[in-house]
Length: 222
Image (cartoon, rainbow, N blue to C red; front, side, top):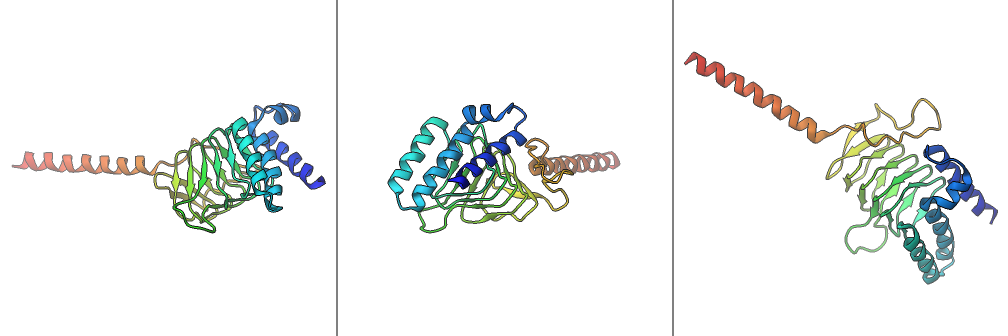
């Protein structure tokens, strides 16, 4: 029981550290659906491990009704998870979430097909999953990585990477880490991410301009 309350205390502290709108722990405990969902999940997961699976599902469904966040009681959640706003977040049965993870509204940790066994992703430590991101399949997202808003990730992500796009692909690796100069601070920026599609279009635009210039020069020489 002491471990349970310790985990909840750490979850609340994580919200205080990462959300500038959080004024005090009482506000977080009473008004943050992400905290309500995490507390409910820790209860449901405890029941699930003790083979009270129907009761665990009932607890998780009640939590889903009040918070809009669906976490299967079988999912393994690490310490200091912060679900910001959270409406529409879905975490599947065999998903594993590491420590200090931040998940924004509309994100999904889902499976593909009807296969049995491990079918949901494993999320490393210090990972940021931005709004509307979908991570689908039994692979790992490495530590200190960031998944951009609206991305659909279908394969493994190495540590220290930024992934954007549909399907998602790595656009930053190693040279920019999610941790800032402050040792324990997590980079929650969801806006200033590279846009590979825009970069590709810019390359095409420049190429078209070059070809047009060559055509004009050739016409002048005729």
